[in-house]
Image (tube, rainbow, N blue to C red):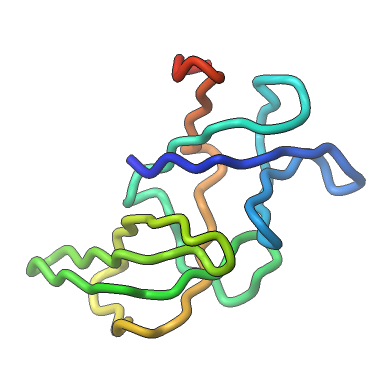
Amino acid sequence: MNFLPLRFDEGEEGTRLWLGKGSFPCLRNPLDKGAVTVGIRAENFVVATTLEDGFDVRVELIERLGAQTYAYVEMTGSNVPLTVALPAGHQAQPGDTLVLQPMAEKVHFFDANGRAV
């Protein structure tokens, strides 16, 4: 599981989780406004086409395991490493930039002590 230090905000478009300049919708608000740690499994990202509901990453390494492909990426501007499962046949290469969108319903929240909330 990828653990990300994010902040969330409530605005005109509802609650959103932010990391750097990228953000995505948050379906529930488990804590007070501010910083939160979220957990997102590698298979719970979607490769998007715009930054509207996601964030960009730079591909560092591709691991092709037959039916499954994993991309080891780094978030642009924050140096946060992530592991992402890519769809079958995706042709990402090291050095490519991808836009990732977490599946909002699959995001796990953790408090400051690391307990799931």
